[in-house]
Image 1 (cartoon, rainbow, N blue to C red):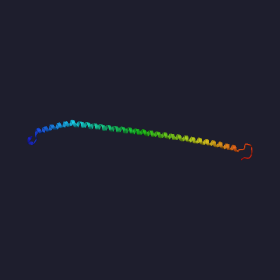
Image 2: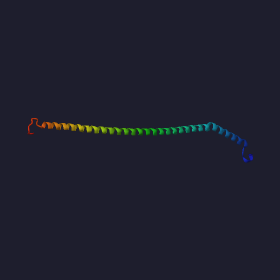
Image 3: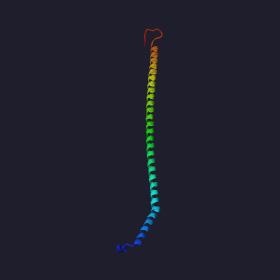
Length: 123
């Protein structure tokens, strides 16, 4: 091998050193880096899952709010309709009362304008 310019004992020593270096790097760097990357990946996945849950909860909450608003609108419409009916009844009652009072006033006025003494002349 010396004819090719290769120092066999030096080559074997370099190969052994390289394999030792690979083993040390694998044990000291590769495993911890892979473990760290796995943990980071797991945290990212958990964050994404939590974001999906929050999005779902938010959509449910929004739907509940819409339902409550619709229910409140319906109740408001019912209250307005009931108030309108009560108002119409009150107006009609007031109209009836005014008519009764007007008839009473007219009757009183006629009674006062007719002579009670039996006179033939009228004022």
